[in-house]
Length: 135
Ligand code: TYC
Image 1 (cartoon, helix red, strand yellow):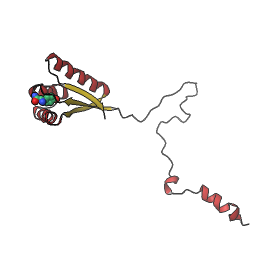
Image 2: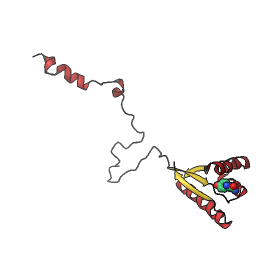
Image 3: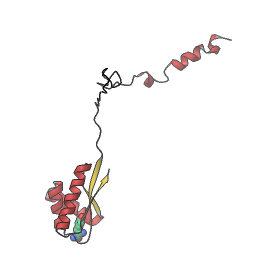
Image 4: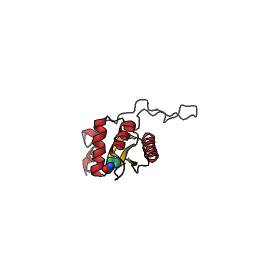
């Protein structure tokens, strides 16, 4: 039996990288604790160096047959910082398609906007519905 047959060459083949990608070391996180998150005093050290993407939510207006168009335009100007032209386009989109997006926000901002819109609609006794949905 030859040396190669016993596994000499095979052992080397196992150790050798299969592709150039395997030769590239995974980049180390800058500031990653080299001691696994401990500072040697028994205290855990929290180091997050990459920021997390926040969950985002669409705020939507739903069409109905009774809320005045002018009121919807006003809502879009007041709570979603749209100018009159864009507010009118969004309102007409909702009127024609049944639903439309007012903006995309983090959870608490979206929730606040929905509440403000619903409270104003109720105060004026309009059936306008405003909802949020996770992106
Ligand atoms: N459909 C309403 C009307 O004809 C207008 C309207 C538009 C209502 C958008 C709600 O989200 C809405 N008066």
